[in-house]
Amino acid sequence: MRRTVLLQEIRKMRFEEVYEGWTEKRFSQAEAAHLLGMSERTFRRYLVKHAEEGLEGLIDHRLGQISHRRAPVDEVLALTALYQTRYRGWNVKHFFSFYQRHHGGGRGYTWVKKMLQADGLVGKSSKRGVHRKKRERASMQGMMLHQDGSDHEWIPNERWDLIVTMDDATSEHYSMLFVEEEGTVSSFQGVKETIEKKGLFCSFYTDRGSHYWFTPEAGGRVDKNQLTQFGRAMRHLGIEMIAAYSPEARGRSERMFSTHQGRLPRELALQGITTMKEANDYLKQIYMPAFNAEFSVVAPVEGSAFVPWINGHLDDVLCEQYERTVGKNNCISFEGLSLQIPKDQYRCHYVKVKVRVHRYVTGQMAIFHGPRKLADYDAKGQRIVPLKAQAA
View 1 (tube, one colour):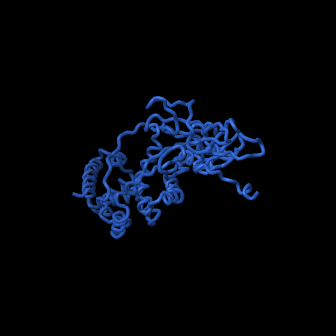
View 2 (cartoon, rainbow, N blue to C red):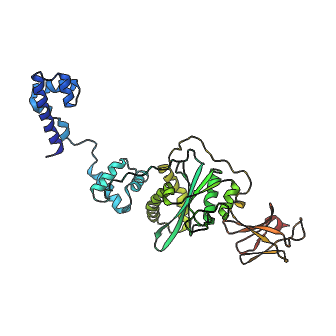
View 3 (cartoon, one colour):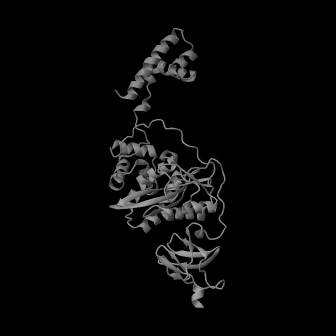
């Protein structure tokens, strides 16, 4: 027996019992209505229908009718065909966002999920257990940022690392980029894009990767005094670094990466993207704006903790820096290269002087004596002569 028919029969039986008590004056109208779970006015309407048509007058004939809002068969078939031909294997939430953005879908998420489940295209997930209480978000954007990396593969035997820099308060992504391997350079790039876009932030939450921290004992506490190149740059900028000691501690960024792992390879494969430049263009122009629109939230406190960067060239902070002593030939040795210091107006030579080598994320280098730059070099150690000097 259909559920609607069963409910109609139960309603008639229950009304018949209460009606008998009411006619025998064992119940008042208010008591009878309470027993049936309705108002006195509705009970009186039932009395009128019962007097005119008997128990059959209590049947709601609307329950047997097809809803005028029911989707046409053609629409359901078009939806399932779209999923099968272009998006097979995508999770429902990911497919739903593309269904709305790129195919003009006007149905809700629950309807789309039920149609795909009814056709056997996606499974029904089991109910999740009770989750432990999440760490509260930072109260304002710019107070704490996360950075992490995860490898992705959509081209056979080609795996690239995705580096994400995101806000703890809002989950907004400020920087996303693919690199061949996560490290100091990729972390500098993510921070630079963020500072140029938003400004300086208060604190930086990371795992214990060797480019972020020195860890004297494997699996132990980080050394906050012996700084890596990245740690030195953060201290220079006045940004507090916070080390996470478990994946659960980075739960917010871990969940975001789980979403990226499920979505990005499928989207990039769908677009036919095969080069890192194309992938990074897609991230900045399409994927990241759409992702932020869908997943970012409003910060608990209005306002911003970001501070504009106004202290000179950011590249000379977000770079690797090494101290060297100038040799007798007025050159310094740096990783197998000999960098010749040109003559200048300040001194005849720099023999035995301690200088500082900056290596930028582009691979280019520069030599500094205190705050003054002495020369620029390309990645092969060849001096880059300024256009003004060439003209002279």
